[in-house]
Amino acid sequence: MEIENLAQQWDILLDKLEQSLGKKPADLNAVLFLIGVQELGKGHQFFTKEQKQDLMHIAICKVLSYSGIYELEGIDQDGWPHWKLIQPLPFVNVIEQEKLLKAQVIEYFEREVFV
Image (cartoon, rainbow, N blue to C red):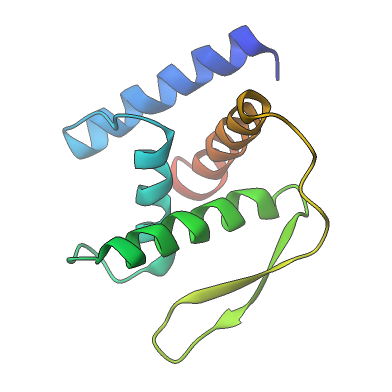
């Protein structure tokens, strides 16, 4: 996905989320948190700081599973998904990581939410 197209698609996604949620997510981390909550499937609740980090990890694993980087290993007794690293993360700088995650987040919403 070209940089200009990615930026445009990202803005469209944020606008759609704002329409759905009534509030525009502040950044990529906020969107990853939303995906983590969605994937956990337990609805809105209070999460500790550690759980919020875990939710973001779940989201990253989920969206990177589309590229074959992670695979769902299973769900634990508390209902939390666990992922297995299948192939090494591509060696990229922070800017490239953000672009990769944004592209995969857009794909997530196209596949899983805005069908």
